[in-house]
Structure formats: structure tokens, C-alpha cells
Length: 528
Image (tube, rainbow, N blue to C red):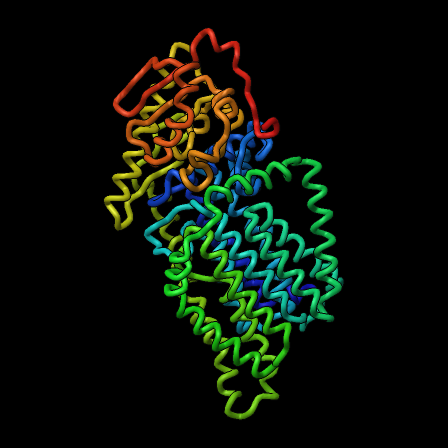
């Protein structure tokens, strides 16, 4: 197939059309709307603000998530200077990077009957402002890293198939595509990166795939060295991951049991189509691949905030359907009927998440374009809107939280001199980005009790508060347990070095004592 024809193939047109439509729907309204997890979004907007102001993840602040979680929205904020455009533009940029990789991988390995719906599904999953498996009424860019992980892994897993429509430099392009996907995953969330590396190792067992897989692993090493030369945060990132694992690395057995019960239907359908493919083409490497899809998908599902929707198995089912279609002529007359129906089974499997993802993109575009809900009335927050979609209770909760942020911003503005380096003892400390203040030096990107800190595992007080001039404690925190634990841990330091200077209906505001202001010693993660 010529290069021109490949660009005009159904898979290519489906991928690029979905990319263009979704990117336009995300970007053109010009604001970010959310009905759920508003506090989670503020983590990444604050991180975007930090990196645009010159801070480096894992060097200047701690985070167990990869640096791309801050540089993607940071790109959107840098381009527009608007927090409300940070997430939509960041995700649109990632879609534009992903689309040509998807076109190459799916276009050279899948027939349109399977590749077109899979391409649309994966791009919708990447674009949607909704947690996978939830309903479209719960729109939010929160936890977008999981959707990135699922979508990019879905593309990578298709590379288990041998290419059927070779293009020029096929092996080199395969290696580059696999390495790019793997490193994007690793720098977004390490658990997805580990699964991607595991898949590349699995590909070394296939003689026909071994060369590009080895090349991809080598390229990953080169990319890692280049990134480290600019980022310099790899070892600190690993350290932050280890610290988070100490707090929340053990999952209770009942969670696995509950998860398996909720996803048992997905496993049954996946097992049926995988078994048919193995019956038609009994290969050890195929058996290992299907097992890898099921096991890695289940592990990923249980370490993120999600109940259903194991995308690894959906991609694996599409691979199985392609294998069945390739060997249709050798199947028995009875089995041929089943084989012909395999692509349609895949479409049915993809449909629920695809439709809900598309609906969420449409809902977000509608409420954002019509300026529904309430805007966050802070100096930098007008582009953030909290909306009510079928859940008045959640709307009241998050709009109430937004009001406390507005009153906190006003309280900071009432200080005798412009404050800087503000720390909030709550889930997220967003006043730098929302009020346009200098970002805090050091500390964590967010604080979540029993997830990334507890009474035993936490940053030392000097590192958390040493570079802070103002501490704010909410009277009605969004994460009550977090605020309580932070007060327990850092209360003695606060009492010694700070004094309560202002109170309001929503806040206690502490300023560093005058005698200590000259002693401020910002300590970032690189010095810990």
C-alpha cells in the first residue's frame, strides 16, 4: 500500500476525524467544566502553574505521578495563560501526537472492520473528560492519566499482530512507535509503563517481532537518558513512588474479590473469543498474550479509581478477532460462521465505553459553551466552571468548596503585603495558581491521607513548611482526614514558627512569625 493510500485508508480517516472532532469540542468552548472530582483537577492545574513558572516535577516538588501529568496541562496554560484552557489544550496536543502512531500500528495490522471501531474507541477514550466506566453525567478531567494509560496500552497491544500491509521502514517505524508509547506511559504513570515494558519483553519471544521489540527497548533506554539529561528527576521520582507504596501499596483481598465479581462478565466474553482464536491458531505466544492482557488489566484496574472497563482485554479481544479473520479460510464450515461474527462481537464489547466517552465529550462541550453552572471567581479561576448534571448534592458540595476557595483568595488579598508560598492543609494547595501568587517551593503536589502520606510516612516539617510564608487551614476541608492528619503531623512546627493573624467563616490564616521570616529555608525534594 502506498503512503498516500495508507493516509486515506478507513482506519487513518477514522483516527484523524475522531481526533479533529474531539479536539475541537474540547478546545473551542474555551473553559473547563466539571461536575465531579473538582479538587482532583486542581492538582494538575496547580502543577501546570508550577512548571510554567520554572519548577520541575520531582526536583522542586514531590509527586508519585509522572511529569507528563504536569507538562501536558502546562503546555495548555503556557500557550494561553488561562487555567481553563490548560487541560483541554493539553489533551488535544496529546491526541495529535497519538493519532499518527495509531494510524501506523492499526493501519498495518488490522482490517478496517476491526481497526476502524478500535481506532475510534481508543481516541474517544483518550479525549473524554470522564472516568472510565462511569456515566457521562460525571464529567471531569480528573484522573486523566488512567485514560491515557488505557488508550496508549490499547494501541501498543495491537502490535502483538504481525503486520499484514507493510510500509517502507516498517521495522524502524514499529520500534519508534512502541518506544514512544512505552515512554509516554512511563512518564505518565509508572504502573502503565511497567506493563508496556512487560509487553515488549513478551514480544521478544516471537521470532517475527523480535527485531523491532529489541529496537524499541533500546530506544526506550536512549529516550530515558535524553529525558533525564533535561529533567533530572528519575531517581527522585522512584523515591516518591516508593514512599507512596509504603502508605498504600497493599490492597486488601476483598477489593480484588469485589473487582473480579464486577468484571466477571468482561472476563467471560474475553475468554470465549480468546479461546476461539487459540483453537484456530494454537500458539504459546498467543496464549501468553491473552493471559497478559487479562492479568495486567486486572492489576491496573485495582490500582486506579475505577470499577469496570478493562481496556487491555478489549484490545486483546480485537487482536483475537483479527487473528480469527486472518485464518477464516482454514476454519471448518461451522466455525466460519462464528469467525465472521467475531468483529461484530468486538464492536459490541467496545460500544458501551465508546458511547459513554463520546457522550461525555459532548456534554462537556455543551455545558462549557453555554457557560452552565458557576465560575470560580478568583483572579485566575474564571475559566473553571462547576456544573450540575443530574446530581444536585455533588454540585452543592463542589460549588461550596469553590466558594471557600474564593473567600480564601479574598482573605489572602486582604493581607498587608502580597503573600507568597502559601500552603493549604487540605487535599490540594491551589492558591498559587488560582490567585496568581508565586508557587510554593517543595512539598507535595497533593496530600491524600493513607494514599501518599500517613502518620508514619510523610515529609519532614522543615521540608513541608520551611519554604512557606502563609499556612491556611480550612474549617470545612474537602478532605477532612487529610487536614486532621496534617495538623497532627505539622502542628508543633506551625505553633513554633507561625501565628494566627486572620480568620474568616471558612479559614484560619497563619503567617510566619516576624522573627522567623529571615529564616525561611526552602527545601525542595532534591535536598531531602
